Length: 445
Ligand code: HEM
Image 1: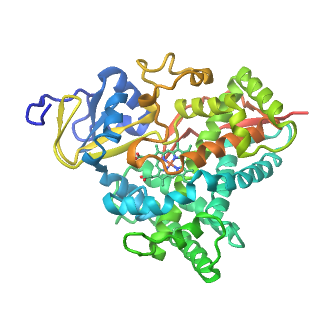
Image 2 (image 1 turned 30 degrees about the horizontal axis):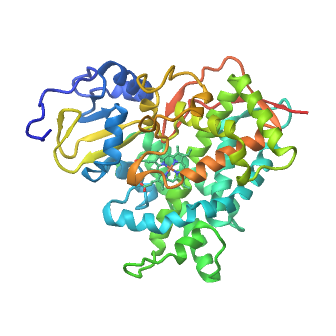
Image 3 (image 1 turned 90 degrees about the horizontal axis):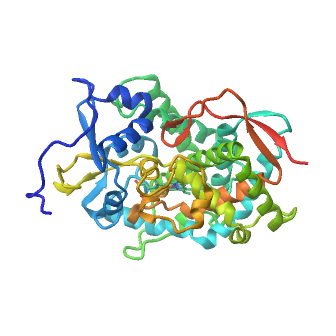
């Protein structure tokens, strides 16, 4: 259908208030609001946040088209840049066009399968250290414990933490907290206002910068390939132009991967812990599989192929609670989408969380049933890592990390949810259990 022939009638969507639109609902429970919109209004609908109209594309095939065949008709929304650019600068998440392709070419080798096999040892060693610190009967806050674990894993893999280890982890904690504040505030307040959140952002970015530039300086001075991402970035040179990445470009890419690579995995693992605690029959089967394959030796990347149930548990966790739950794009020109005319620059959202619960593609979508991944996966309706040219560059890393951490956990311990908690997802930068997850550790004999 040509743009001119497209219907101009108004898109359906929830009624909002005169000035604020749907802001109150957005702030109360955005994941719930998006699901309700998809169920009530179908493939494409609209809402308004203050004066800003936003579309939600809920239909899996439309989303798939947007991300693949029609990818070049869209850019990342300027909102993404505003929300996270102040922290992450110009890295893979925010770059566009030729610059994006150039960075992607330079970064990808660090996350190739061959490199990831090398990171497997780090993942297991850090998991053992973390899990062995949990005493039998202890009550832990699982999301915080796992955020620490994945932070350690990604720092070791990205830049072989040396004597700056403690500084890096501390600086990143503040930095990630500040970034989440920015995303939660959803750019409601302009950056120049002297709010506490903005002051905190400036402080944590300054602190993170100091550590990042020191890491880069030390590595340049030593000039060795440490087999980590930092070495790849420093040595990477552009075939077309022979130009190396500048320190500022390396800083932005390092922090982008550092951030994208730990909160997402931590949220995913926390949901896996929760789902296994709530489904003892799934956990028992997983335990049996892991113990049969490994005996009492530690897991390796090579073992993962022999543990299909483990892979299915990982996939089903990412379906039910995809940490990357909401993204947006803007059409570069006026376009047709689902039979509607969409003006250039309109914010168009898509949500793996919504797509993964589409009843036309998934039977009983709210149930945790890893066995569904024993059959053929309905691809367009499964996109925990996105799709097309902007698909997650760390997907292999993340899947490997999740599987290895679970394979290390299950033989050692079970988790029990502390009773009386209402577990609901909060739509922060990642989809996480609201208010954390209190768990009791039951070590296996
Ligand atoms: C369970 C863990 C993870 C999930 C669910 C996840 C999800 C996603 C999704 C859905 C996108 C696409 C965003 C879009 O289309 O706008 C994305 C992009 C990205 N992810 Fe991940 N991710 C995970 C782990 C990681 C890890 C471990 C790294 C790095 C080590 C990473 C680095 C990135 C980067 C740099 C991008 C931007 C890619 C680009 O635009 O070229 N992610 N991720």
